[in-house]
Length: 284
Image (cartoon, rainbow, N blue to C red; front, side):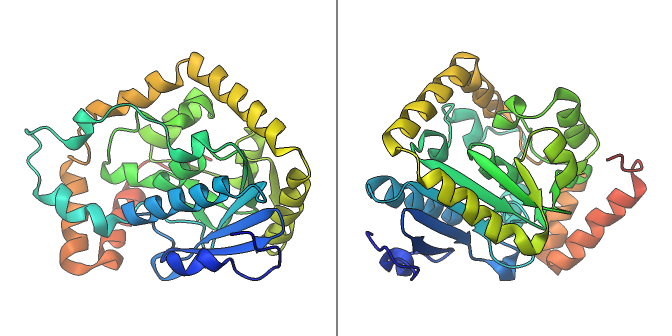
């Protein structure tokens, strides 16, 4: 993977959902499912882990960036992937979630700097993906959302966001199906910089190039120390909370997924919007 030009790295052909490009010590990665609004699925998650494995194994890579191709960073989880399981499963029976051991994502243990540039829309699962990322830059107008909660959704327990967002912001997100924009995210230090959409790539590259100049061994030491601080504070315990989640079980949620299976995503989103319109007025 030691490619030092701006050409795509040789390993990019091994990826279905990511586009990779090497710029000297920086490995740029884009979620490349614009036709699906970069929806995250289990195969996408697996490929993201493979990207990090490649980057960690290459001593010439000092920084990884993460962005999304198309009009949004990511709509969140690929609902088509989970719809049938949620519609057909018996809520009285146990789930795989209940048997999971508490664990943090691969990116949490990545020893090099990861910088994300987000734009357009960041759905719930995408926020989980971003939670362990070191630095986040956002295009102005980006919407960080958990509006699916207005149709019913899984238990938000077990989320690193509990250490990153104020308690009442989390409550607004999950109790009201709320969202916040990039400027609000900046005020909460959830992102490090807000920039014009057309300047996002340039800003991400600038930050990545700057971070790449640091000694990678020193960065690894710093990151390990930060990880230990938050794990001692109880981060692993927070991750374990979600193990007893009952998942998507509300009647509205089941109706959403059934509509998705029967009539497609567009009709399902219309149904969700009806629920949003009928709910409380949004407060940003």
